[in-house]
Length: 218
Image (cartoon, rainbow, N blue to C red; front, side, top):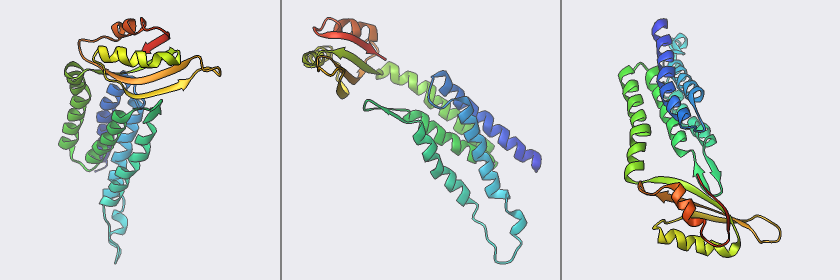
């Protein structure tokens, strides 16, 4: 029995580590160690939930709901996931990583309960979604980027017109003042480039707009 429980914890950590490795290779907020800890922790919570109270179950009028701890793990992961979500200049980042942590917790709970096949299948499906679907999305839909430009305020409409001519629809636009005199401002917006469009070419085209001092697409 003990050996089986130890295998569950190790397997949960290994499967979770595969997801964490993919996230770390993408330089995301939560990487290998975080995912391993989440998976192992979830597995141990599930083990405690199922087997940790055997010594008191024989006491009269004592009952046990093994789903309560698992339910707390599901809700508690929301706090850890929220920590990976970054809102920077009105652009939200880290949602996929937060969802990955949530799935990792689920994998840990599944392995901790002894459902090995479901845990392995869930890990494979998660990796397919994170890697294969990412490539399909980039090839069929395009890449999402953040454009940041330092320019004079009068050039902001010119940048939007230039993007429109290139058939690029900006989102989450924000303008902030760069100096006290109001002669420079910073323009930040989200853009989605089709597979045929390249960030370097877009930057080169926008630099021809009068009043742009610096531009970066990342």
